[in-house]
Image 1 (cartoon, one colour):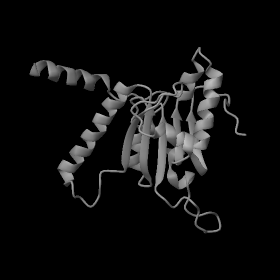
Image 2 (cartoon, one colour):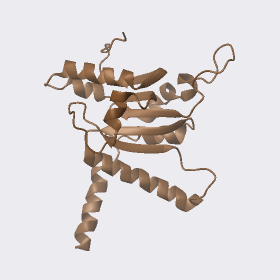
Image 3 (cartoon, one colour):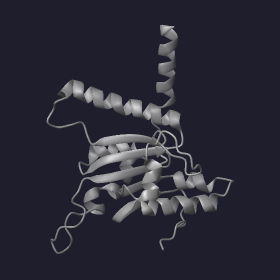
Image 4 (cartoon, one colour):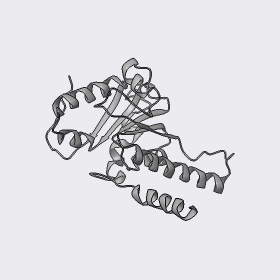
Amino acid sequence: MEKEQKSEEENLNELHVPFEWLTNFSTLTPHLNPSKLFPTENDDGCETIHLHQLQVLHIGCGSSTLGEMLLQTFDRYHHVINVDVDIETLLGMKKRWLTLVEKWNQVNGSSSDKPYTGQLSFAYMDFQSKHQKHVKGLDDVFESNSQKFDLILDKSTLDCLLCSDDGAAGLICKVHQHLKIALVPLGVLNISQLREELILQQK
């Protein structure tokens, strides 16, 4: 029995080896640098509104390590929420993240003055369903504007929606409306896609 359980865990680890669709973090790094996206001073030397710790929403995260790398690379990104429709993948990536944090604490001590990084959360979301599961309050976030994000990331999720045979155009409009509502003033919606033409027009 113990052998079977170990085998299941090994299979889970193999199943959720990180994979990057479209491009990797190093390619996106110049476009995600918070000092460029969210300067703390304007050209006149006056403070801007982006002095707080930055909140990030990564939609369609899959098994990407983009959220991890943001927190590890840039101190100003404080909290990243990874959302996806695949619960099994989310659980696998959450396990990976908790393992990384645990290893850090073992080496540096859990009471270290410097924590591992900011906070990484994982949540299920299906824009095609009104009945969200395993997302405590996340659907309400979009509806009630109770939480805002400085940066919303889409790395090839839009491409997937465009491949949908079932009302793709309407679904894309719905997703885009939700995302615009969830941004802070002067927040950034960063979309990486295969298609060269501009799909979404800002109104």
